[in-house]
Image 1 (spheres, rainbow, N blue to C red):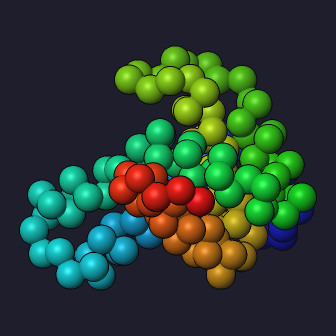
Image 2: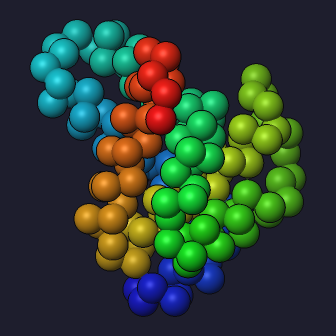
Length: 135
């Protein structure tokens, strides 16, 4: 798939794929950290895949994205949602969807190095926020 074809896909579809790609990245990161208990792996991963964490990360990283990535994030964030998310603020949900859409776009367009760079940065920022570190 070309970058242009991927870029103009429905942001919801990109987010659907990006959610899966990011979750796999988080799970691999957790496993490679040396943790061997499945329940602890799951508990550790949740903070990174929750909408609030993704929203925090993409907001902090937004100014460091390329113009093309920023435009895609804005388009995905501003897309009308058809169902109200449960247990999460609507604004966090929209930012998280935008983050996932960006990951889906980068994956489909073959930009795996950039995708991995941004996912690792998201994990770092979520972890820093959890531990009270400032950017």
